[in-house]
Length: 388
Image 1 (cartoon, one colour):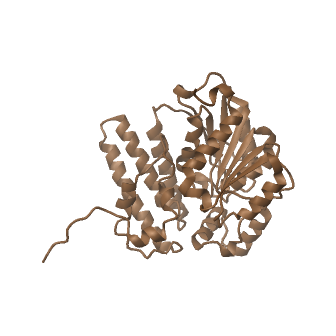
Image 2: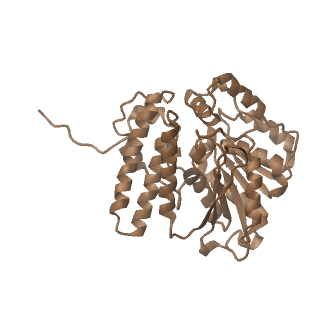
Image 3: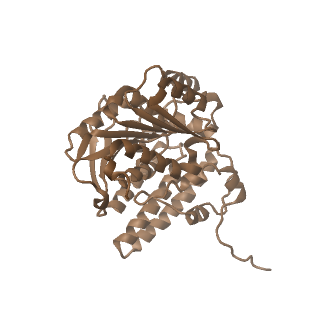
């Protein structure tokens, strides 16, 4: 009997085709500090994937979780045997990334979700400790009975690019299933590289709170309290602030622009919109995502909440807003964002990528770079914007 010749790990063709939309997200941006994985991790984790490729089924995401958890364990073992701080840090970043991609579409058990997100936070903080970033951690006290504390982290740019004096700062918001230490920190890096500080936070229903408490729609109330933190910090110039939200966080960014626009020089909305597509027509797994984040299993009630959260574009914000969107987005319809663009006039800039879907994942690096430059033009003095 002939023994089959070994071959390198690879992503099964059916999985590559069926989950193609998610694959660019697994390698979200080209992170320098945030957790990051590489194509080899994808191949090793998904080689021989047995479950039927049905992204709407719980069984698919259970096997997905188990495989990425196994890959995270391999990286944690690498970190344990590392003999240098640099080697341990990089391995911990990879382990944290694998833990996140294990859980990002897993909604069966809120306790499992919380455990993994706490592990991501723990590993990321270990990886960044003693590095070139100056990070201050804090918490806002609950603002309602039984509400959660709101953890935040203020990150100053590396000394090599940090300008003298108080710094401009961008506050960044999570989406529905992102985690602060991965997607949001990755997005923050573009600002840190430009000498701009970044404030990251987990609002109610975001980050470590997802599935623990319902997602707060009126997130501007949390942002208003974070502004108090910024104003009290002498390292930050509270007159040079920006705000960025991605996906559902982009929707929140539009709310912040309307409600708190006078506090910000500019606001960036990455793939959010003033209304959500009808719940009934959303993909099955996205429905589960909304049920989990909103803490509601009643589909009619969820649609009622969708109807209620619609933004009326009649009220123009007192700041400049940049919206970046994919024309194929099936979550936040482009048509509604185009109507908002017309209503908000010169104070709103809409950039549309015709062949991209939600979050423009194939172009996210370009979108992030362009948005950061747009923000830098509004927050930084002319002499610091570009090297000669």
